[in-house]
Image (cartoon, rainbow, N blue to C red; front, top):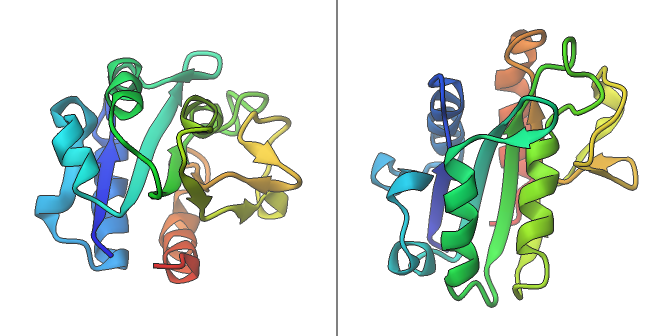
Length: 164
């Protein structure tokens, strides 16, 4: 299966994490893309899409994803697998932690895709997130502000659990 990683990054942190996820999944750097560079042909060229965004403000997508979502919705996603990863700050924004993953999933639900890579939420300290369904995050939640020491292990565990 051909895997493409797409991220939006304002400060470089999500871009860095995307690169670390690529290494864990053995994805070539040529298949890691800023969502601003995406187009339908590029998106449709992958069987598995790994999509990452940080959460900004009070539970909002990273800026590049507002146009990025439109690009993904315009592409033919039928039969594709989507894995999500998100970055948040569980200390300062505990009630909107990693909401961006849930927003992306909500926008792409019904497009004929299968979402993969949910993660139990019990190893996290936060109050609320739209990214939690039935006790699990819809993807890999990361907190590079308060729990950066857990990131590498979380990436490794998540990457090895993905059905690729």
